[in-house]
Amino acid sequence: MATKLKRIGVLTSGGDAPGMNAAVRAVTRKAIDSGLEVVGIYEGYKGLIENNTKLFQMRDVSNIINHGGTILHSARSKEFKTEEGMQKAVETCHKNQIDGIVTIGGDGTFRGATDLTRHGIPCIGVPGTIDNDITSTDYTIGYDTAMNTAIEMVDRLRDTCESHFRCNVVEIMGRHAGYIALNVGIATGSSQIVVNEMPINEERMYEEIMAGKRNGKRNYIIMVAEGVKGYAELITEKIPLNTGIETRFTRLGHVVRGGSPSLRDRVIASRMGIEAVNLLSEGKSNLVVCMRGEDITSMDIEVAATLDRMYKHKLKEDELERYTREQVEEMRAFCAKKHADFEKLYNQALDISL
Ligand code: F6P
Image (cartoon, rainbow, N blue to C red; front, side):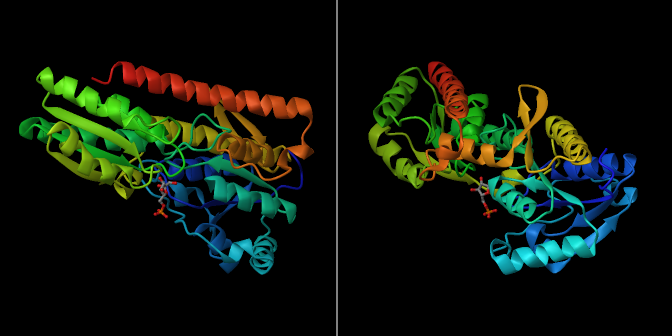
């Protein structure tokens, strides 16, 4: 362990996710177990600017592993993006003798972690968002719970569709990624899944609904990712016109972000929290903890951000110039594989949709 590290901070930022508490608990307990002190930073970067902090004891993280939300609360901070805000945040770290921070959240959280690291505060990011939309990791904390909450609700919608011979178009959270829609769509036997990652074939959707109708099928769920803006409402109008089936619309919004975390979220959050403390203890910084298959690993936050923009076709001009050709090829192959895996699952979903 690097001798310098004595006290670390932990914060949650961006949209909350079930399992964040398990990560906060693991960070705190692992750190204390390693002889470190832990400062809980409330309301993310906003709290860091405002010195909204508390020196944690073991009991501060007792009885939280089973609770949704985040005991550290979350907030978005515009001030943190300014140099003045950053200086205040750094000042809080110095005042509280914080030698490094574990930042739990999504890509916005990691941008903040990089900025802080550049200003001399080592940070390690832990991916927490229900969307599972961080390219560098196969898994983000909260994803499993959100999907399990969603399937319970969609199953209920199916019951009432079956009684009334109806279709229900369900829009489900996922701002930049269709992972939740795809998996919940499969798990609930949806007739069609609509995501930004794959082309929409509306004609095929109507044909399949009609084929189902001819076979006596009485319930139809169409799962649409939130990122496909306005589409769910649009087809709610069009399905009855094209199929004669009465159709309702349901938006599964923030309700899927709450609730007690699943076993998978509790365990992965715990493993990721431990890894983050280990990395800081080894003197490392500016890394994001990742999951590959069932392994916990890590990656440079800035490489992870480039990878993310590459996957989402949002690369900045000249962004790839600081990488070697081999690195760029490796990143391209990584993104291609990720997309191919998504496409494969989507096509399998189509094969069994009706
Ligand atoms: O990123 C998680 C997420 O729940 C998205 O699915 C959704 O688009 C967004 O956050 C909603 O953000 P807010 O809580 O600010 O409304």
